Length: 304
Image (cartoon, helix red, strand yellow):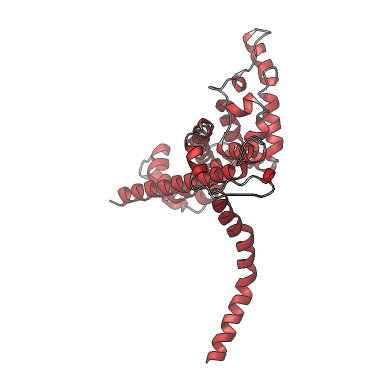
């Protein structure tokens, strides 16, 4: 009996061990190391010397105006994702599912096309379009008749997130559209036909039937949108240029990158960057938990 248990344990660890080892070295170790690093003043420029400083990096982060500026921009990105990409993707999926337009496969492919392109390529593309004297500025000149008109939204701190938000919607809406379309195709069409026979209009079918049935998909999409928005780096980094423009559009991931790898005057830049990365994780988990809570409350109201 004991021999059989030993063989079972050996087989178990033989199958689980390789995957567990990969997880520990690639995922768990960097997380633990990042948390530990945030409680020190580590800087590679000092030859690897470090001292434990407690919560100093987190205190510095809380009073750093760049952190709050980055966080506010990140909340804009989260809002664009949750209240822009997901609703638009849902509506487009419903239009395709109900065959309200012709050539459904063509429109589906065109909306989903950005997912096949490199994020850096998309960022450079939109950066060229959004230049002060780029194609959009030329179009404004033609429409307004003003040869000196420029597209200057990317040059102003209070408007730089508008074009970035538009680019984010253009890129990621197709992803959520496909998710909703796949789940819409699982719905029994006889139920929708019965609702139409009873006199339900298209908006009523969408609000009273489709939305409750896909509430779980909406919640999952919201979690994906929040997590992706807080760790998003490449599109905004490629879309903005160095200097004032990138600082105006700075989000937490870019702030972390610049602090850890570019701010050589910071005496504890690696430790401070680790503190910022940990804050991103905490904020992300907090927002996801809040989304789950709201989703459960809405489902409870519907059941009641």
